[in-house]
Length: 281
Image (cartoon, rainbow, N blue to C red):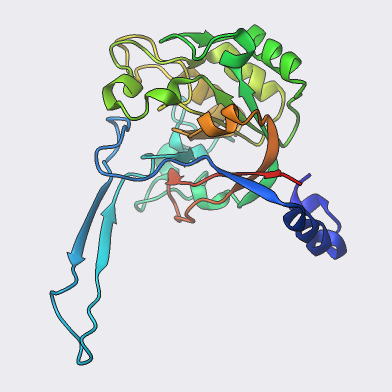
């Protein structure tokens, strides 16, 4: 159920009742810090203090500090807009990518077109379903793997859901080179797995890896078929570099997902801090 499907006169009562029953919040976003793992294709995160305590004082002795940050929109836990990829010069829906990107931003397919989302989330814990702690490097999650996971969890994926794929690779996040996996490859869905997701008409898909999908050893981001299938062909936004370990370890497989990104006009993506809400009462 999303907020939009609850009758307007009952929304306040339903949400208040859920809060009063007790809600556990799982933070699925990664902390933003200098040196964190990221794709080499994007400007890195930087944070500094241009104004520090002690640089100046007010008449009453008070001092203030403030920050400056810079980063690419696909750094840290982030969501891809549909304008992020094109195929043969066309964005999702057939728009001309070159024409759409004039003026320093995108006139269509940009992240500001995606509204905030409150809806059903499903965690597909593939390693748990297959009986391993984490998937091997460069392992391709197949449609059969996804079917087994759904069956063992009892969590069918349907239209409008947000489906999150756990590979277990997130355990390597604090080891930058291991997490990026350039030499080893990274597990994830390939083209067939992406078509499995698309066939269920989900709203958004996410994963605990740097590029959502399987990366072959030594190939980096040379080919990203799942991006093509989901973003360009089916209009399904992708969330990358998610923190899914706590959620998985708690045995949570279904939850309410709250998703709000920065409303950057014309952008190809945005940092995001997804929250999984589970009624604990």
